[in-house]
Image (cartoon, rainbow over all chains, first blue to last red; front, side, top):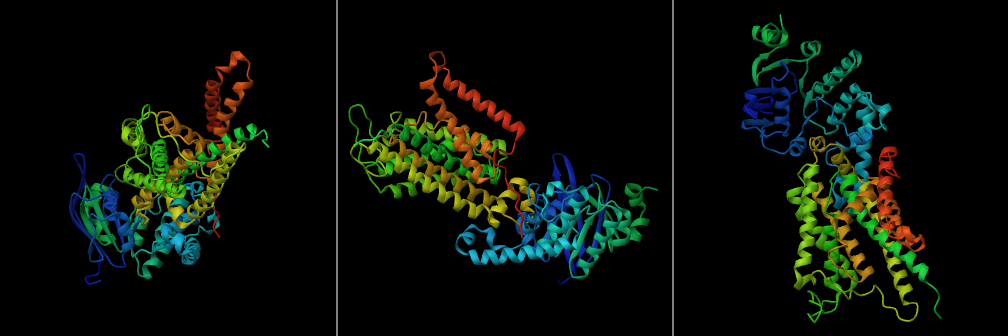
Length: 254
Length: 321
């Protein structure tokens, strides 16, 4: 990385009907940081994540990831570059097991191409075995191993959040966008989840997360970005953001 | 020495048509049961396969008094006819999928049922190629037999070849749907957006699935042509065929290959039984039997959906090791 920026969002705009959900939004996320994104409901945070992940196409502006301009790219190409997002409302694959959910997320699994399935069964088998082993490691990291062969629909809300993170890790991302990773997760589990994120950051990954739990945001993030009505109104250390009058007025409250 | 093979031929008729429906059901099951693509144009792909095969394998049929004639005279080997039927149906399915497969489920159904009706209307009206409403006659038997047992031997051949094809399809499909490729299909069915966000080009998978399913329906069309030796566009390829296949997959169990086949044998079995019963039933019931069958199928479907919505054979949980 030349300038140490993992993600750069430049003057991005996205409107739905007459509403500018994201409006002239510019921000950066530093490499190997844990950066928080906060703001009132409807501020455009989840929309911004969807724009970055390629699920929406911006009306205007540019998005750079790892020195590459990615706006307009399809989501599956963006994931392959190493940028994965999780969902605020879990999108577990309901009638598939937890382990299947994880193995599916593996990158470059040769058996996902039909021609390989037919003509290279040996390689397909080797890849699949390796990815299953990796999936079990990730399940251990995220404390889901006991649920490996349960249907994902049977998980509790908090467990589904863990599954979201586990699945994202299977894509071997350099940047992970986490949409409310600890919402609905009990406090002890939330703490160990954030410890895990800290460990993964030390391994070299970058995290950009939306969270309403101020305990997490203030203690776990290096930097906090505040959005309001589609654009950034504050950006800085947790302490400076906490003291910012505009942030107190629009979000934190007096 | 002629043996009384009437009953066996009758049962063979049931088995051979159940096999044809089972192949259609396997194609639809791949598209809908595994991938969530609700194809409402099954009859159209079935028709394309049947006509492609019939045109490829029949002898020259020029216009004459009482018969308009049709394209053909190629007299290709029957196996080539089967391959062509699969190829043309499969390619058509891929082309149909290109603009429609991005549509939401209900719009995909509308678009594909319209496609099937267009295909059927073309088959009715494009007389120089299809012989119009009269249809294509003179389709050769799989093997030519003569003598008193010819009818039985013909039926036995159709059943044997059909059973071998069905068995091959079952193992082939099992191998691909239980592969990582098949896992992506199920993921698309569960949540396409999430699957895309996990790095899969879901559009490509959906095109592949539509093409493979269409090719299977084309193969069923070929088998239909060489079983009945005669095809016409009005009844055999009506939307009711599509609806029957849906019922078979729902009854048998979506997302389960055995289920789709069991569904075909059960639901077509009811139709066949109703025809048999017609001969045994008292006079006042005779005329009502075909309609009673529809009532029975309807009731069966309602009861099944309430008591066992996943079908007779439910989709298994895949426990990975």
